[in-house]
Image (tube, rainbow, N blue to C red; front, side, top):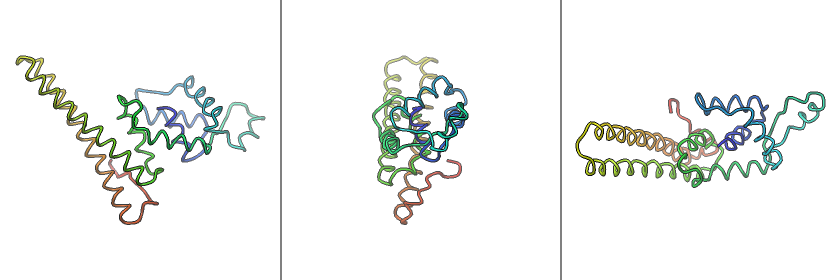
Length: 196
């Protein structure tokens, strides 16, 4: 997840390590945070793997000032970014959080790639809704009428409604994408609606 965040940010602009941490924490916060002890070793690994590099002006400045490092994405890093964006099978149990990270960078994909990611997430959410409904039905038949059962059913219903809200939101993103493509504006892809 952190690799995707870092590469996504660097797809937009070169950043100092401190700003990467700040923006990443704003994205994943308020309760989860990426520590410096996690971030800087990851930046080093990404740099050693050739996915990111220090900017050339930064390398000159580094001889004078060892603390500050500004990073940019490399061609290999761009390939890795696209690979992570198109990956729909890793970390499936945490895919909702991962999709929310991806949603902010869908405009960096081709329209057909966006549709693939959006359609996959819609199917993922719909499968979650079906699962909740199936489990609710099983609960009704397996456990006698009790306050515990009713509370469990209310929680399951709430989860199903949350998944339906995810479907509705993703469908709006998908409709906007299709509309932009049909109007020949795919190069101006702006999927983010106000209030979405």
